[in-house]
Length: 585
Ligand code: DGT
Ligand code: CA
Ligand code: CA
Ligand code: ZN
Image (cartoon, rainbow, N blue to C red; front, side, top):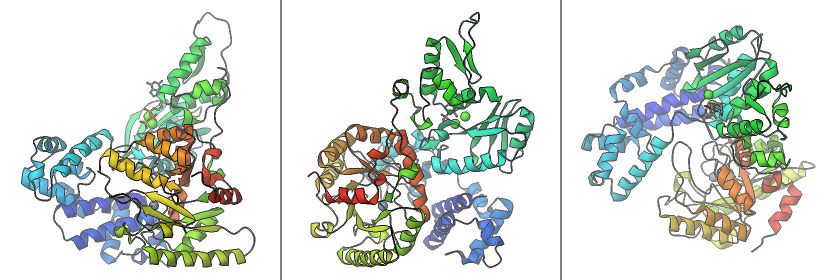
């Protein structure tokens, strides 16, 4: 059981208790516990086993919760949750997945309208019956209808890349402990850095395939063997994820790794190019199309060999989506994709002054340990009251502390990290920004984000963002479409107009690196690049640990074909400081 698994159980428990009308205090306690657990770097098992620590040391974890955690760690189960699962109809879970519809509202729909499934709810919305329920209205009804489609559209079983990545790391570590495995690599959508991953695909080189399969099935985290054959097997592992394993001989490894990395569209294009060269290509390597031909087929032990045989340079997995990558590879014109080590600064993060979990000094120390040269502290502005957003007075006080911190850092010796005085200012529902211009003008770095009024019509939302883009103090638009992967669709915004306006004013657009945001996405970021807009990859960290998601943002940028030149925070501090001094309008 990982911490995330345990946290998920508590979250689910909180949902069901709330659905059952349990008192709000108890529900909140479970939710808070889930969050605390998910944020622990150390495993619960280690904390529990530690000589000098105990689970009750964790914030908000009392004796009762600690006992429940121990039961989960020992048995993998939470009896109270199972009891609730037995009582609550299964279809309620589908209803709970509708964005914006909490357990209480779901309960009301169930009680008042007798809704028992997504279909029933959809019908009730179309029949205009939902708007009559207390607390609902025409607007809510319309947004429920839209979000039902969203729930259906997101295959909920797809995991966020970052979550799948943990599973990949664990299964590879286990499999690399198998003496029969000569080499094993992950492929599929995980390797292409897709934002969500359906199943995990592994390719191994071994002569004793049976021993490899045996080892695979014996993994601690294998909950089910879906298929089991001589050279291919599928199991169900952590997070309910399916993991496919294929064993090949080393001479075919390049062909197999390429084949199982995909995408399907990329493979189709590679294969048809192979045919033009007289070869048929599959996961076993090259064969002559004409079997009577005497020519020796190209070798396929490495991916590079497979591509080179077709006059192509090796193509990074993130670009293998069947877009223009073959044409570029044929002319050796593929972009030199940005890498995580190119990143020199992080320009969006929060502290305990608003809804962050770590203090200003902790965040600075964390960023410094990651080797960053500069960061911007960008807490929320006052409108975000849930996060205790900063008003002018509190913001100026924070900036004084940053000034002092920079002085202390500079006194410590050469090349200290530079901390910029920033703000994540809200674009208000009625238009305009959430802090006066004279305050914004004093900031080193202003991120403008839209958190409220997300269901406004397209023209309104777009206008709010365009207004921020034109504002002289705003340097970057944060998470420009507001989507939360698997949870909430993007707001309705004319992204082309946003990109065009950003290009005109020299405003940057963010690629938010948070695994459930990754916003701009790869298509939009590629469009922004073509329009000459530069981007900022930011973690939006709410804790020191949160600084680690930079790699997810970099992956998304790579999928968009971005080079370090396209990314503002790949500049070293001196160049970045110069850039801060200029502005085209
Ligand atoms: P996923 O798992 O839905 O996130 O996406 P993928 O891309 O990992 O897809 P998956 O697991 O079904 O298959 C892995 C790779 O194997 C896929 O990217 C390309 C290759 N592949 C699978 N089925 C086919 C097929 O029918 N034709 C071709 N050309 N390639 C295939
Ligand atoms: Ca897959
Ligand atoms: Ca698969
Ligand atoms: Zn933020």
